[in-house]
Amino acid sequence: MTARKPILLNGFKQATVGHTAIGLWRHPDSQAHRYNQLDYWLDTARTLEEGGFSGLFIADVLGVLDVYQGRIDATLRAGIQTPSIDPLVLVSAMAAVTSRLGFAITLSTSYEQPYLLARRLASLDHLTGGRIGWNIVTSALDSAARNLGRDRQHSHADRYQIAEEYMEVVYKLWEGSWEDDAVGRDVGGNLFADPAKVHAIGHKGANFSVPSAFLVEPSPQRTPVLFQAGSSEAGRGFAAAHAEGVFLVSPDTGSLRETIEDVRDRAAGRGRGADAIRFFPLATVIVAETDAAAQAQLDDYRCYIDAEAVIARHSAIIQHDLSTADLDRPLARVDTDGIRGVIEETTRGPIETRPTLRQFAETIGITGGGLIVAGSAKTVADALEGWIEESGADGFNIPGVMPCRTFPDFTRLLTPELQRRGRLMAIGGPAHSGNNSLAPARHAFPPNIQRRFGAENHRCEKSG
Image (cartoon, rainbow, N blue to C red; front, side, top):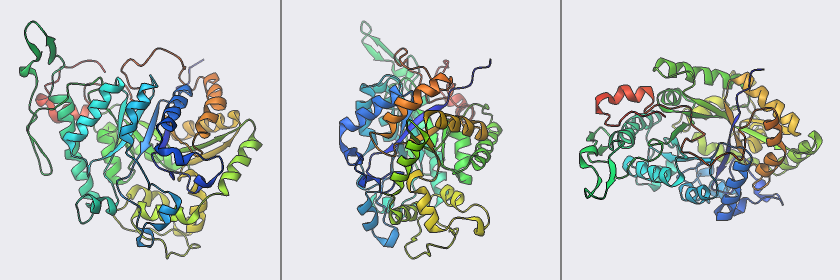
């Protein structure tokens, strides 16, 4: 019998109160208010590792959500992404209580200087033993731009142009500045690091100037596992060039398969292998002892959806104020510099087939716009396997709908069922050995980067 490939799982959270499930902070079982307490994150990390999850993906934003009605009132009332703390500061502590769990952290190419970002991620890669991933975003909130010294954000096209040069800089820093054996620790020769094997990158481009050598010696992975979440035309091209993991949001497996096949074809056109990228659609999972109990739990959660807050969040995502829109008219396409992939996904097809704004708010209030299943362990496992087969995905981002309950229920009920089916990695094996379980098999560089830097790459080749 042919072994079935494992289903890769990421826990999906944001260091805030309201994330994908909007309004559920009011539920009596919710622990969402503990987002700023360290033990909340330590318990989450332990639970995910026990449950066989490959990683924890932490989303982030750098601005308040102030598009709806031109102010932040609705989003503050619902705790949507404000208040929010920096996810990067949580990682060292979570890594200290786990040994295999990877951590994919959202950081922006629009507002983080590449030299500093490269240093922070390399530092964490050292401290975690090679378990760091970077979710590369270009940022789409005007409020972030205004609070970080600009009049407004860059255009969508400009953001991706900047991101391309940004990647060139960080690849040079991580991969080209220090040779593998630059650090010799030769006490007798009074030589900690060999100056002949540490190189200035000499980068001078349209957006960034980084002339010197990197400040950090090579970490276990050098380059962290690279993730990307944009599904626009520019986003798909960027993913094909750089991503090792792609996060997707779609309510059906047909559109997921279309996006996955398109990005894989683009990656192949760049000389990358068929398995160079792994795909993780958003999937909300409610699992209980029986189908009826799970459905009752989901129905209970739906009672707490804050529809106005959902619309306020979506207004910020698409950078278009929906406060005066007719709730009972189908979603209309807008042309903004918001998140284009979300705009395109939510306005697919003829207008008469699209949901109304009211229906949209009621539907995604729990799911964040992705797939959803509620049932017993068998029912949910069947659904996850079916989605994998239908879409061609490699795994899922599982949001913590009810913090401190969703992931423990998954681990207690669903993990054993997925293990029984051979769909989940065995738990309790040897400690992490430096190969991030979130990453596909890697070479020294992705093939496109090998071509780009060629002889400029001072790094000695070694197996991934």
